[in-house]
Length: 509
Image 1: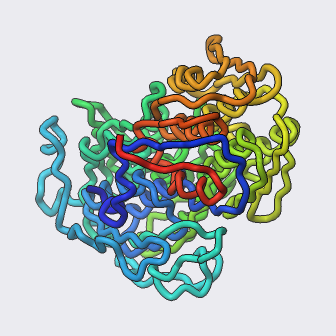
Image 2: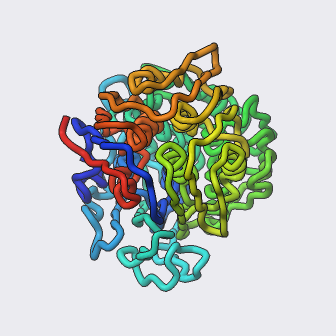
């Protein structure tokens, strides 16, 4: 059981289904919590230096629990606070002495248990280095992790307290890593901290092959030698040295891994064609708070001056950036079901391209600094979308857009330019009456108006969410099985939709 499961058993949705009775027009205001695609990387970054970290606006999702489980296996202590909680759930239930026990595939023998082979950076840390400034926490004036939650819709998340010891065991075992792709990002910080790492190849959503070649090629430029043996990456470096790295593609994961390795490397590292996503910027801001020297966050070129002095690198507090993908999910939902909603806790600039397209389709969209309002009173017009690296339309939005276009007036399309094979949900939407055909990496959708209820299956996080919101606008009772996929990336999707007037519940399959 993960740390989040211990805190909130309702997050363990194995064997559950979403039951959606539609159609229901949506009305109201809801807040989104921190971004899944940021918080997991922030958690990994804590491995860079000894000390105690507090991360607020954390979404209540199972992937956070998995990353907490991984950090514990590496030797950290993790406590989770939920909104309104009075104390830590399962606080520090794993001791710092606990180290991972990889399965019998070779990784267990990668490092001995002697003192020489346990990472020991010599940093003194700053266990009580919590900033009280409003910039560093989501709820200014909070006096502790349990209180670091706003009751407003703008701060919908919980909080993590992570205690990183002076010694960590730089091994990420398969039994945890197999369960989510983001686990690969512990590779960079463990190399930076220890000069060596063993990481199982990552698992997660099944929607196409996403190799880690760019991660390893970039790390090689920094002086890392690596090989893959029995499904584990074994990496080692005598010394990390800055260099110029040009990525073939602006990969978010590769950018983040290289960034976290480079902040502790000797000299200057330049990452060209770097990812520009808001989640990468969020990681840069966190690393700077820790003592990193980074220029160019949000641009395609990152320049990192390595900080070799461990005394100048330590823990920090941080508020996770709002989840733009979750916010977009609710915008797509109101586009399907009609109504009027306001989504708070997100930076509208992070969804500027999408909001522009939705407005062109007939949705009334208005924004302020921390919210997006959307109103739909009649059937939207169709449109053409293409997935692109930020600031383009994110590939994660594709299933949501296909579901939306299935209800619009006219023929629309979504072109997938980033990942192949992300189409398994199409047959489920067809079962609900959608008129969809696939042509290579293009999905062509002829809008049919209202969809019909059906029994369908969530194949991954976003595809599952797309089927749920399609059900909100469909006639009858839609059942979306394998709800556990959705819980990996959505903080109480059923409850949030109910707050807007939808009839959505969870039941055992």
